[in-house]
Length: 69
Length: 488
Image 1 (cartoon, rainbow over the protein chains, first blue to last red):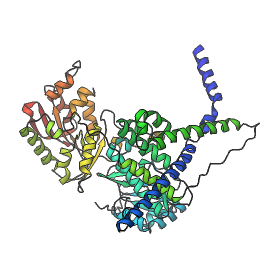
Image 2 (cartoon, one colour):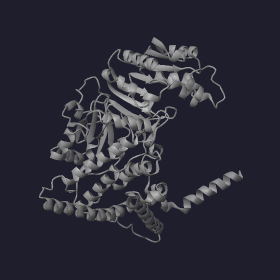
Image 3 (cartoon, chains in turn yellow, purple):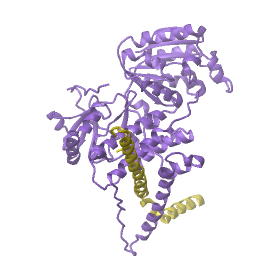
Image 4 (cartoon, each protein chain N blue to C red):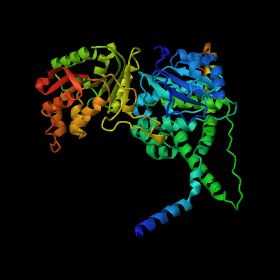
């Protein structure tokens, strides 16, 4: 009997304590992350693109197959 | 291998919705037992009509990277009670056997991830995107990954972020990192949570020196920290939204991203994943071809027995359970349309996959499964993902050098194991490994012997209840016996 009272009281307490937890969208952080990663990756991506173009220009070759874009 | 759309069959009129296809309200998969259909909403139909005319999409179809798909025009199907409510219907080539990422080896998940990124990059370059990144959108046609979710193709809106990034990390990237950087098998994680590995969990698992491996700091550490910060902010917001406060829900943070940023992210992920590898350590049976306990003569006799009886008639689908590196699976290829090679050892299956993916004519689908604890029915209503033995049934099962592991090592009663083999619905080629065999003795070394009924006589009594014993042969000096059992 006493156990039941404690158990139900604990359930009610947990239910009252943190209803807000259920409304957190775990994807919100991912949207910001992908923007940061995208910006950083774009710098390296563009740098490599021009590196290959310059390299190919100096060696007199066409850039086909080397361009990361 | 070219995918062929099945000929319409008039005798399959019961069309059932796939219980695992419900998340995207714009489409749903249906199965009539022979053909696979997909109902499309007006938006999804418009997208399909547009994307199917795109050169890049036609290239993906021709290369076998996207499942063969065609519009359905048969009036009786378009008026069907299940399909009639959709704006349009397409038909996909049937995948011979459905498998899930928690049953794949490292190399299989890696190739599935690279396929996804390749398709996404080509879509983005042509003004399209993939709206999600679940690993369930990739299946294996024998040993070749293939993308199956056509309605995932959507026109890309300039400035929109990659919505599937988080899902790609959870279902592909983090499991691969776990194996490549920590040598932890990802199967149990993906099987227990169908959404994949959460960034916060990944951040705890891929820690220490692994944090400095390629891709971990941005995709795992930063990702987890950003998620935790966003969660704290949203928690505070949710607590403030009570009736008295009359607060307003803040709008989703739109972060615009150029196409170059998206392509750069995809390219960076591709290079990270391409570099991943696992330790090629030997397993107990990793070199089965040379380390098995057979002498050459007995082993040849066993091969001849299997080839003779498996080839008794054409087989649509063969299961080789306890396949190890696939020697006996390959013996079935001349008379089988497809072979599913199942083993509980991830390294053996990885070796098998690496061999088979380089063989264009391969009919083998390698899969990891512990047969005393196979993948269950689970997900929504326990029906979203099917148990291993609730999918396409085999018409022949090979069960070689396995029964002693089930009865002695896993303590499965022999009668229950035989009943389960019978429930699969096919003929059976099974090797009985007696308790006097050296391998059985090894399993018995540290166990209390409670297997008095594990005898050849009892085994024959049990199988005779379900099968006709069509042939048998003694192997290994009488310590083993192989049987061909026809389903009665």
